[in-house]
Length: 132
Image (cartoon, rainbow, N blue to C red; front, side, top):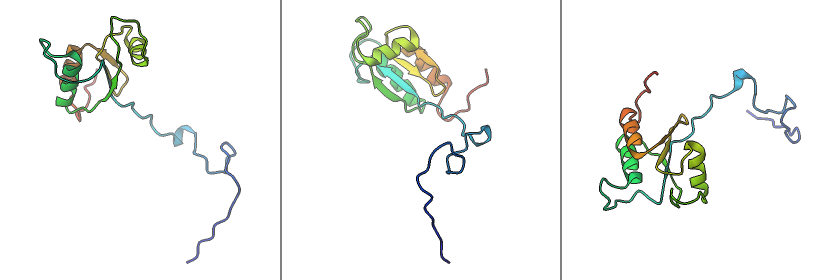
């Protein structure tokens, strides 16, 4: 069986017959969820600090709950002016410059390592989210 191919010229979006994706409501894909992000200072390394380092504690709680967040280093310090793009984004999300900050798949921003750990415990990976 032979297959005939023909060249119809360059494709242009919006002409209707060019093979452009259907933009009607029926042809739209559901919006993709944004990946989970964890904004931290410099790293998730252990420290001798009593109670552990907050960024590591938040990261460990998420990993123990089965999550694999994208880790974003914000550098700098919450005490200093927001000069890094990471700190500026954290301030935009929470109104504060302090990390850690978790942005869930649904876009909710949670600050403070203890709140992040509590969220991770209540929302293990793979579990169906509870109805509000």
